[in-house]
Amino acid sequence: MRKLTPHNVTEDAVLLIETLLEAEPESFDPEAELDRLTTYTCPECGSTHTSQPDEEGLVDCWNCGIWFDFKTEARWRFPEGGRRHESANPPPPEPDDEEEKYQAYIDAHGAGPPRKEITHIETKSDYREYEERVKDFFRDEGIANLSAEVNEEGNAEPYFSWTRCQCCDRDLGGDRYRSSGWNPASRQVQEYSYICGDCIYYAEYGQLDDTTMLDLKDDLQEHAA
Image (tube, rainbow, N blue to C red; front, side, top):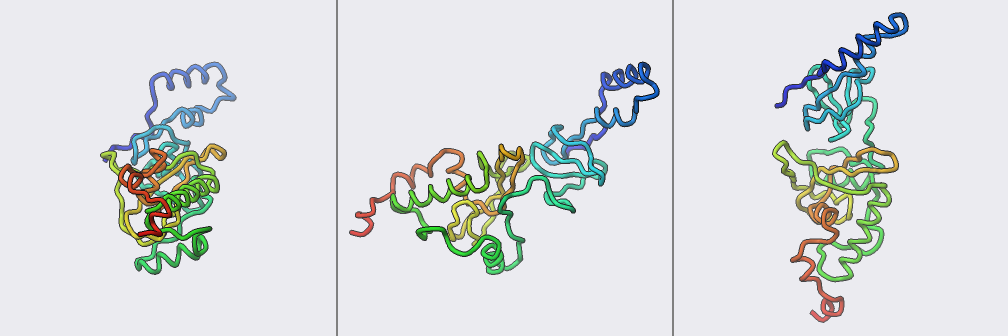
């Protein structure tokens, strides 16, 4: 694990403080200025693009979205008292039982898809419905992109769940990814816990994988079969 270096104060910063202190010894607070010039390294992603500590000593990483205690390296995605990166439709709590997980999601988001029910995407009308759902999700959430969280090696780590995908709202069990999207209006990263692999792929490439796209049937072909 990367060693946290909260007080990474450069020689230039120290020189600036000494200069200001010499110029205005009565009105200048060297301790406050030192805090302002201090950088904090995120223990999750290694970025120094962070906030200053809040009143509880927690620092917000603007790169990966976690909060961390710069003294202990403890980290949270949902710190006490709320979180800055708040999804417009936050995921439900994660009970141990899969049926309870499904019911918790339904309770939080409402049952049933908005239009036609789809599970597998086999026809062109299925695909049109899928695209509309993804567009609705991006519009309702106000996000400009969607990507899976990755580990220290840069790999996404899916997990299995029967919980509906938060993006396309399909009830097909399978891989789910913890993901995030950037909201340009609020200038915040919004987090999601139940995003399926199809939606991660679609958000990256603007369509589903080549095999799925080539196998899409016309609706008349589906009825004839």
